[in-house]
Image 1 (cartoon, rainbow, N blue to C red):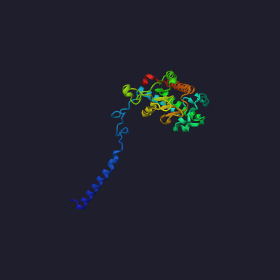
Image 2 (cartoon, rainbow, N blue to C red):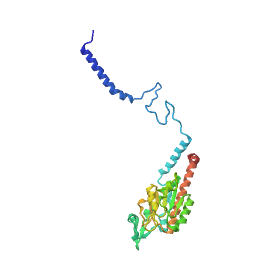
Image 3 (cartoon, rainbow, N blue to C red):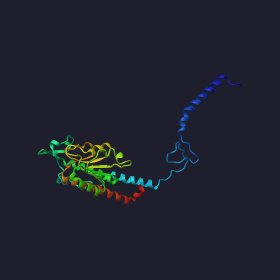
Length: 290
């Protein structure tokens, strides 16, 4: 017997409903991972470090393992607030004896230095040594971390009477110094003046941020343009806004400058000795990291 028209219409409606059901279910089934007879999941996308098929991920080379261990060694120093114990290098009395608290005349004061001024006596500004201690500790700690990571540190000053002392400090620390006239563009135009591949300093230490009593050192602005971290001694006539780690203190007194050079040299040498000790402890050879 031939099926009736109502029955054919019912079958057609059922087929249409089934097709709509499949259209709504199939996209969801595509997200389900199929499994082989060994119940090994087959990923829809191949990872970047995995070959085609089910080949195992290649084991890391010796150089990669050394680099990972080296990164762990560097990150270990960041877990301690004073990993190099720079707080024990000086005290507030040492800063007072070195005349770090003496500023310039009140008429030469920079308004941005007012938070660091303790007061004024006989028209001469007195710098707050409590703040100088805290800022100096932070600056020495940052300098130690740069030296620990084998960064390039540059000492900069424009005061002629301290040029020999600063260059001697940099030489004994195994770093670099620039205590002469600063030509514009040494940082911002280095790839033209020195050629491609030149490595800029990782940290610049300003023993004085001024060219003279009124003019700021050009390297302070250039370092800020090139995003180079800076540590600087800022006297009462200086602008500390462009210095990453400003240190309120006297920048033109011989005892104060000698103390700064001594502290920075001790900090850098201590950080380098610590790095050598950690390298020997973890068995990392420098030839493999090159």
